Amino acid sequence: MFFLLTYMMLKEFIWPKKHFKNQGSFEEQYEMMEVISENSDTEVHIQKVRKISDNKVYCAKIFFKSVDIKRGDANEQNEIKYLKKLKHSNIVAIVEYFDDDEKIVIITEYLEITLYDVLKCYKKLSEQNVKVIAKTILIILDHLQKHNLVHGDLVLQNLMLKKEDDQFDSLKMIDFNTVDTEENRRSTKKITNRKQFLNCQPTSLAPETIQQYIVNKQSDVWSVGIMLYTLLFGTVPFDGKNPEQIYDSILNKQPKYFLEDESGYCVQISQKCESFLKRLLHKNYEKRYTARQALEDPWLCEES
Ligand SMILES: Nc1ncnc2c1ncn2[C@@H]1O[C@H](COP(=O)(O)OP(=O)(O)O)[C@@H](O)[C@H]1O
Ligand SMILES: [Mg+2]
Image 1 (spheres, protein in one colour):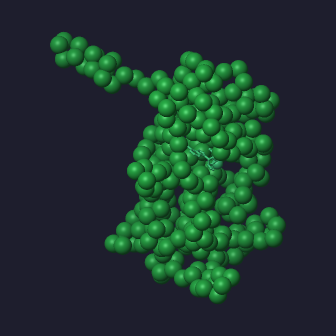
Image 2 (cartoon, rainbow, N blue to C red; image 1 turned 90 degrees about the vertical axis):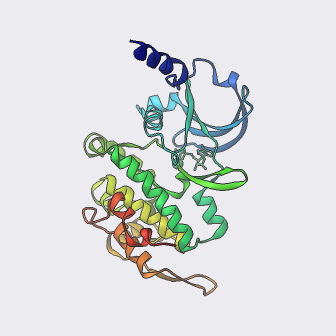
Image 3 (cartoon, rainbow, N blue to C red; image 1 turned 135 degrees about the vertical axis):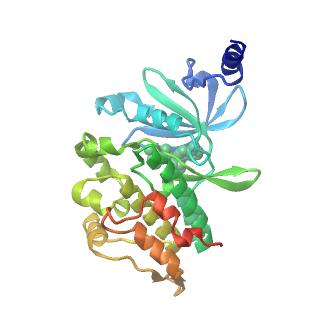
């Protein structure tokens, strides 16, 4: 009995259950800083904010309801649901959220820079740096796949670096708006997601998505392959002048693993790295690596 009471007290006071929903008003508790991104198609705004009570900077993702409700879209709940469920040191941390008549606001930790911006700055990254990034992304993906979830939008803009003590030290996945279970993807979402596919960057679509509107765990692995190739070579593996040419390249061509850039400089990668990328970018998703298999690949496991 004594132990039970002690346990209950500890649970209540030392490990209190975290309630993410804030009952107050977002505007009263946060001061607006600069707008980070505004997506007029989805009516999602990303805003840097400062919390008045602790004077710290956070990121606010604001979903305006009127538009979402008109579209019958319940995705904002999705993002909250999965950010709460999937807590991981390499997934952006949710702090709290607000839900009023007009909008849903998700407050997360503030992250400094996306991998997309890192690439813009450096043009291409070294094999050693890409290996570190690959390991982290695959660890997060394996975590999602253990929960039977598909991310559905793994692009360089959805991976960010956190700056701590003046150093960029952790890579974090963001944007859980498209996350869903593989079962849901297979059944109900198949048709409605068609529009979503068409909004995606054509260069990041997997062959099965183009041909059969399938987005499964293996399509996420394809996206990882696209991102890693892009970081290594500074250009996407499948390109074209218009979406049709890009889709043709994704379905029928093999990427080049030896590239010359505009200044005549040759980008070459090791044989092990090339074999690894080929297993991620296998056109048949049944033969493609799973996240777990990829983590055991010799290129990732060898000492750097
Ligand atoms: N936690 C964050 N800290 C700082 N910037 C962020 C954060 N989350 C998102 N962003 C920025 O906003 C952009 C869009 O955010 P995201 O959640 O991906 O929304 P969308 O659904 O519009 O793609 C990101 O690519 C990134 O540049
Ligand atoms: Mg995004």
